Length: 196
Image (cartoon, rainbow, N blue to C red; front, side):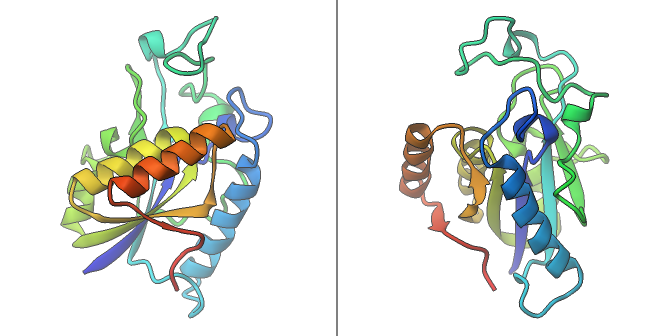
């Protein structure tokens, strides 16, 4: 029984100053980075994760996902375009001791990290199972979109799933609250902090 941390889309375009900024994104990046630092240094007070992975939006030509007149529900301004600084991890997320990074959304909209692929072509669920992971903690940006989709897919895939709300930033209070309720109703455990 192993536990993984899944860090969702902590990228420049989703933090302050980015093309699709979420308020509090840079602070969340800092808090996750600080936790990862303690974890990578094997600090006994750090959360007990066996592996840590990340997801990244990675858009080449995602079709109708981008729009010059976005509705911010199904269509969005251009963001996380491959080859731009906006697609990179936020600098506050340092160090980045990820065991794997899963890229999603190259040619179509993709919200869940479980839609992504690692450099070796493996899907997130398969990678986690190959590493004997049974429990996952999910954090990142945005609570009400990609974090929500990733946590819901984690439960559907059979993982015992916990949402770390203090390590997430949401687009809007109403949609964030609704997303947390939906996740809890689906069987996601909701916790303010990482497990020790």
